[in-house]
Image (cartoon, rainbow, N blue to C red; front, side):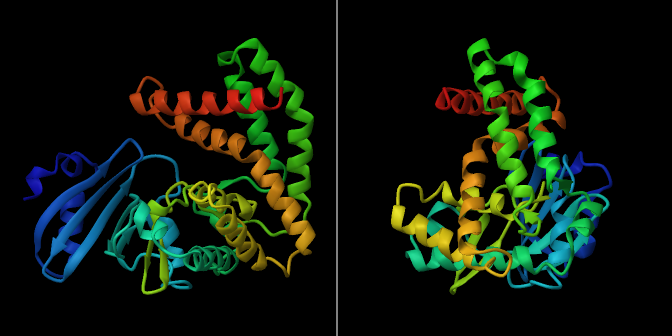
Length: 312
């Protein structure tokens, strides 16, 4: 059975032997769910149920590092751990349930509100401070580091933009600096930022949510974590407003409602630039000639062009 998984057998450190040693019952079926430059995910059907193996290949921290620290404090919000190898970036977790666009899209707005409340609570109550998360490999985008990272990214890719778009982004720099400085001094504590909070990475069942895919988590302004979820409800204005309001309510001890809304608006204004920064970090960890890196670069440049032209 294992020999049918070349994606596993070529990984360093013999993951097959590790998985077999961690499973309490024999494995009856094995299926590679995803295999990319970022990670490999395998579904394993055992006599005791389904478990998932994940190996992260690039960009610390690995999922194992994050859920291994979240699980003791918030076990109901992350996948249930079977075994972890943080050094090699491997995790084995119990099946949390079905995912996909319909898993949340088909739910009423109250379910979306519950997800946003749970996510805000998770960010504020991990049991660890930002410095601890940086120590395990999370990129530090707190305070002025966000502006520094954005400036470095724009400088790095500027040669690939045409002169008009390059000039447009240059003219925007004072506004970018103002927005980043405002976020750095708004009094809202830095937290973990899940950079891919989309419905496909959520399991919603029995009125409970489980958050998946914590690879490439960073530390920074918390509001960047909700941004991706809003991509799924932009066309539903009442739902979007309810999701934002419930999320912000979890931070009312940190700032006034007006200050919270102002910071959230700053994040929304920076959202495309922030996504370009995320792609930039991933591209740097890949073979620049690879298809994955080239696709990310196209997405990044398209986003920056859109920002430049929108501000023209």
